[in-house]
Image (cartoon, rainbow, N blue to C red; front, side, top):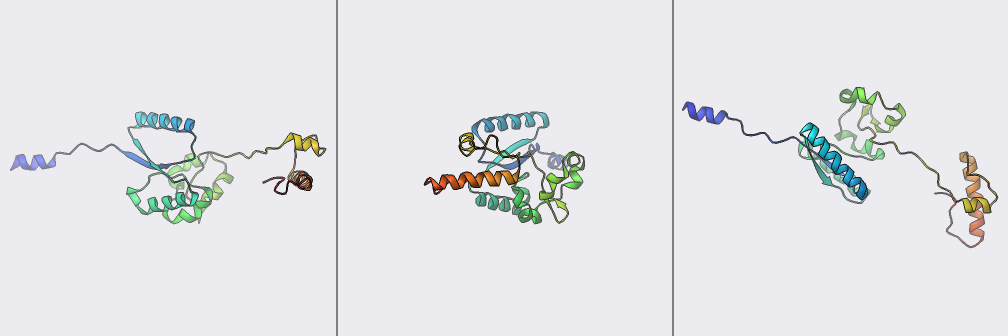
Length: 179
C-alpha cells in the first residue's frame, strides 16, 4: 500500500514554459530570421519557449484573431502586438500593465503611452516608435520654383497644392500633391 501511495505522489516531468504570440505577416524576410535568432537566444537564456501563431494579412482579420485569442484566455495568446487604435476595442480583455511594468514604463515618454491608456488602464506599450518622414520629388520642387522642401505644415500644404494644380492642368487628373 505504501508503494502505491509513494508511486502516486511522484511528480511527472514538468512541461517547459511556452509563450504563445501571434507574429506579424508584415515582417520582411530579413526580419523573420532576426526574430528567429532572438527567439532562440531568449529560450537559451530563460528556458522559456516561444510558439508563434500566424496572423492573417487583413487588418480586420488580425483584429478578430486578437479578440478570439483573448476570449480563449490561457489557451490563447500570452502576448499580442496590437495597433494603437485597437486599444479601446480590446481594453475589456486586457490587463493593466502599470503595476507589473512600473520601472520600465517610467523610462518611456508619457505622450507615447496616452494612446494605449483606456479608462486609466495602460493596456499596451509601444515596442517601437515610428518616426514620420517626408518624401518629396526634387524634380517637381524645382519645376515649380522651389529651392527647398517644405519646412512647415502650411508651406507643405501650399507647395503641394500649387504642384497638384499644375500637374492636373497638364492632364494628370489623378495627381495628388501629398497623401
